[in-house]
Length: 262
Image (tube, rainbow, N blue to C red; front, side, top):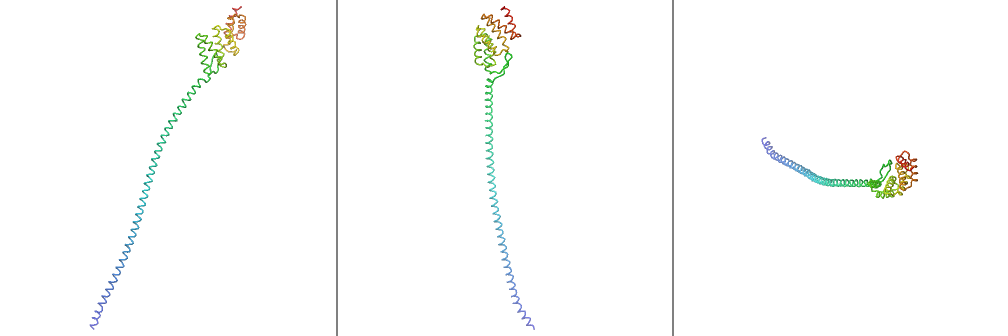
């Protein structure tokens, strides 16, 4: 009876050892299995890290490229701004130059216009009032008439005769003609050129019998006739004067002369 348990005990030890070995092998295989999984996990993690790192590098390179492009764009924009500033400065300078040139042109035009107006003002007809008569006359006519009258008033009757004679020939349609004929006749009377004086006095009367100088011209004709010893002609002229211009100052003188002729 005792030998069976002993046999059982002997038999159980190798079994237990074998079982232990089997369990040990199983544990080793499990450990090996777990190491493989870990390595795979590590490799997979490394691959993911590399992928992420590559993506990060790529993103970094892309960002760098983008930043570089943006920097270049900013530089180009800055250059364009500087160019625009230079162009604006040039245009401003051109505008200022144009403004100066325009101002100079306007000044020259103003000076030219004033010069033209000054020249025209010398020849432009102006309104003249002489012996109660208003008329338009060129300034040259006024100048020549006044020059001749000034010579007459100085008592230089010979030169005054020439000046008034030239005036009548040069300006036959001038409003100054009738006064010029009057003073021409008086200058000729003063130089004892009675015949020509009578001719000019009569021309005056024929041109404008209503002129304020007409009665004096008729009286002057009578005076020339008296100087030429034509008493009959002078009497008739004085009588005509009294009829034509009875209220004139010349009519008073005519009455006195007629009284001496009787």
